[in-house]
Amino acid sequence: MSDTMLTHPLVDGPVGPGCKKVDPIVVADNVTRTFGGLTAVDVAHVEIPRNAITALIGPNGAGKTTFFNLLTGFDKPNTGQWSFEGHSLARVPAFRVARKGMVRTFQLTKSLGRLSVLQNMLLGATKQPGENIFTALIKPLWSKREETITSKAEEILARFKLLEKSEDYAASLSGGQRKLLEMARALMSDPVLIMLDEPMAGVNPALTQSLLGHIKELKAEGMSVLFVEHDMHMVRHISDWVIVMAEGKVVAEGPPDQVMNDPAVIDAYLGAHHDTDLGEMTGATPVIEENDVAADNADKKNADKREGAI
Image (cartoon, rainbow, N blue to C red; front, side, top):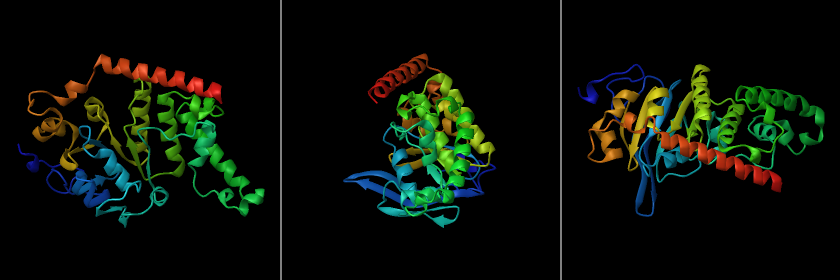
């Protein structure tokens, strides 16, 4: 059966690249970004469904992170318009995008190593009167708010099993723990849409399961999730909807099982090897898990050295 003949509860009409959603939280049109003669992003139309976990996948160089950067104000497009909850965010600076409820994390974590875990969390909170140079001089004007956000930070850290490290330097955390901290810090601003750029990259299998559980909890709490990921087994396991990019364009989208068997997707990843199932290919490879463990252990050793230097 042709993809265009299929329907889905999230979609208003037939399933296919650029299909309209029943309740989109993000709508993007004609978004392009070029670097010299290279077109990194060329998205004609895409919609992100509300209160769903959407995976953005594609081979290396497909333009996924660049598209993330454009939507969240960390880069400027050559052309295009996009909206979040009906409000245009085209060319809106990143800090204003975050204030509106669209918050992202990064593949390379952005924790401040010389601040404690708790201090990193407090940086993510909004509406802090103590940030004003005048009110900062009068403690009663900001002390109650600081108590409120500190309590909130401790609750989130407990949920992410990081509370016992709240007074530790962020630099002392392992790579996987820094991923948890970045996701936890994003929740301090009460986001409506949380965008995760390769949240599982470099994380050992034990913490991967923890991160997966937290992502599912985000949806259960009413948030929408958009994440970039390469592990097709993980994508199939956790996502409600999958959007596939290749050479800057959206080449396919749909529910996970349908997308994994789409010839356009298989061609984007594997060339002419259409007899290979993407989920099976990337599903359970011991070498990958061993590399994840090795990477996480190396991160922890380097972090220990940095903490000693501090």
